[in-house]
Length: 520
Image (cartoon, rainbow, N blue to C red; front, side):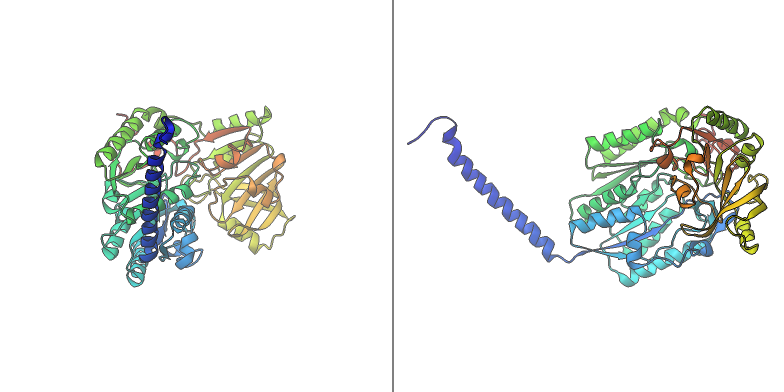
């Protein structure tokens, strides 16, 4: 018997539902069958990572890149950094992939305290990559983890050149690239690569996430579900690293604007590199890179908006001033005596780790209960070894103040050797205890302290420290500010190869009209 009302549609509803379910199951089965039947996508993965401070005195060559060992290869490459780990985890989750680690250099000795990379080193490692790609190919795609602020002697725009050299071997297949926030890039990289993904946070919490995003987009590209096109802009703004922390405005606002564009257009990847000011290269400064799914009009619209916004906030982003050494140290001592402990000093300009300006000022101004973490002085470590010093022994020596023209004066320390032994990848580091419960941590090479773990590992009671001076720009905020540990943070523009005042940097290759140097 026919019934009126809602029940009359049920037969039709169920018929349509069952038909839809059958169709969907058929499509799903077909899709699963295709995934099971096609050969696995073969993806090559490699890394060539260096942030080059071209004003540092020591070139970066093969010896520096192989200080910690020969190039990585195979599975070691697939776990070599967070960008790659995120990429690997995501594409493996999709299934149907075969990942091959291509020979890649390790981190160089001294990191960004090394100057121009030699052509010999650059040619060696790009050559090894090309050999592996040739011998282990063919591949369906390539994933490259690069920094973006690499500088090679007599070779402009090295990251773009890496991609071009790889392209010569692998041909017209997708090449995806991840970059550090401090990348100096321009359209040449966009023309060479298919898609670029840059971290949005400084400190760099999201390296793994950007690797995941690159992996997801690459799989979709290989399956024919995504067609990456890219737009690039250079806003004409250069900023010192110490101003680029994304926990404060306007750096935070710039990245939030990028995220809003991505929220409105889920197929878009909006990247901003703030740039690395201490590389004397023509593509220095901020870069906007936008990837969309075949929509070049949208990519250009987003890139233009981001470009214009960065230019609008240029004065607050790049025009600030920080206290110099004597003033900053006086502020630190005053804050410590007012109970705002521990006061954390960011000695952000020291690229070699060897400068002594803040140590000397703290001593001269009567600082107490302070720790310098760290001073890089291989000579001092070797002296302690030669003298066969043991923990508890008296020490009378000079440290630091010689690595470059900005390093200051060697400082005389008379006290006790509180610790002398291994720390992380160093065979020996020293903790010298002197004066009014003061300490200095001496490492053989530059070491940027980002968390307070170093104090526990070296047996330094953190509760005894009123002032902590770190050779760090922004990364320290992860362990000292965001944890609530620091009572106050004071950034000091001490002399060094990474000053906040960019007018002190002897550039010869950068654009003439870049803000704030042009002040246009």
